[in-house]
Every structure is written in structure tokens, then in C-alpha cells.
Length: 364
Image (cartoon, rainbow, N blue to C red; front, side, top):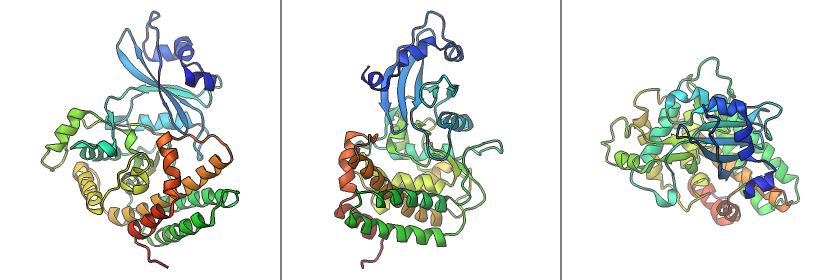
């Protein structure tokens, strides 16, 4: 397997020689676990496999790079999945290996989730309603007092400070382009203003994904059809699909996830889709229909607008940092499509759309 050759890691050997893993999955001595490479993200290698004696399918997830705000990435993600089990919308955590002998930074096994990746270029009727239902079901899970996920006191300020750090790295590099810097400085000004003036969130906190990309939503075709024909009252679908890839969850505000999902800096990354303003509002209202009274909307709308601005800043500064890595020859994990989009994101045309059309800033 090409990925194993480059990484020096054998998923086949790990699955078949790990007694604790096999016990956790109730694999018999005769079961041979054959991994199939699923894909590699910025932080993880992913393999699917089946236990022949039970017919159950799982995903082996191997962490290669930890997230910035914790040292034990795999245990952090595993704990998030444990906390979210009640939603029935996230992979079931089965086995955790964060021992010294674990591959790379640790590994875990989670349940395999069926469904088609949400694709903004090939939206089916009902897909977005299913995504709204999935997100609402996840957000409805109340974190317990024992939940140890990161809980920023001021989410907007925390995100803003992360963006400052990313941009400073870009500003100190030989990759800095004065044209790009001028655009991003405009976005910084808007983000700083909403950080300063937006009222604090309401008391209730939720477990949020923080990076709800379309590829993180797996939607069965039958569920999309059911959601498309729903009346628009309460739940659209009993089994809308799954929300996967929980690398960086926090205890925070639902407005952050909803804003990230509809932002043009999210949709355009792996597609050509941009939400018109009326479709943004339609998705927001579908989300609240799917919430169906399980928690309050109080304060959401103002915070949602602030998180839209912050999402644009996050994406712009991430692109700047990625540019530093590419210029330096450092390996940056992204799809070929995303790599091709990077110069488009940093173009005058796209920045003009973000600053003036989307954020509505005044021309200087």
C-alpha cells in the first residue's frame, strides 16, 4: 500500500497483531483484518476494515500530527466521541491506543458510518436539510460536568488570537505579499470590531465540531429523499446520516458551527458553490426547525453574524500560513482540488467578494 510505504506504518500488522484491539472488537482468532486506505487528512491516516466473523465494519484512525491546544490528540477525539454517543450521529468509539507503543501520536478504532459525502457541486434535494438535522442532533447533546473538552471562555477572542498567531508567522516569512496583507488587514479590522462589540453568549454550552466541512457529513440517499419531502415542521428525517471527523471539537457555541458551514470560505474550498444570502437564511431556519425546541435560540443571530466574520478571517490566515509552507517546500496536507484553490482564495477577485460583498465593508 503506497501510503504505508511512505509512512513506514503497516495497518495490516497493527490490526492483526494487536491483541487488545482484537479483544475490543470481539474478533476471533481466525479473523484476518484487511485494511483499505480511506484517505489522509491534515492530521490523520484512515483505514476501513471488517471483522469477518461478525460482519461489522470499522475505521482505524491513526494520528500523525496533534492539534495545537492539546498533546494527546487521539484521546481527546476519542473522549469527544464518547460524549457524543447519545446523538446517534457520530462514529461509535471502540478502541483507544495512546500508549508509548502506539503508532505515531496514537490510534483509535471507531465504527464505520454509511452514507455519501455531502458534495456542494452535486447537491440532492434534501441533502442540506439532512445536514441541518445532523448538526442539530449533535448540538442537542448536553456536555456533562466531567467532559474535559477545551472550553474557551471567550470563543470569538480565542479564534481571533489564533488568527493573529497564524498571520504573524506569514508576516515574518519571505512569502509575504503586500497585496494579500492589505486584504487580510481589512478582514482583521472587521473581526476585531465584532470581537469587541458582540454581546456574550447565553449560558448553555454545546459540543461543537468547529470545522464542519461538507465532507464530514455522510448522508444516505434514502434519507435525503425523505428530508426533501418533509413538511418543514420539526424533524426532517429520523436517520439523516452521520457527522464524522472530530479532530478539533470544543465546548462552545452552535453559532460557530453553523456559520462555518455556510461561509463561502468553506463551501468554495472543495466545490464551486457559494450560498446566496437567501439560502444561508433558509439553512439557518431549517437548522432551528431541526433543533425543535431542544435548546434556546437566544443570542444566536447576533453571534452567528460575528462568527461569519471570524470564519472568513480563519480561512484567510490559514491560507496565508499554507502559502508559507508551500513556498518553503514543507509538506502541506490538502487535496489537489484544494491546492488549486489556494491562489484563487488569495486573489484580488475572491478577496474583493469577501470584503465588500460578503462582509459588507465600505470601500476605502
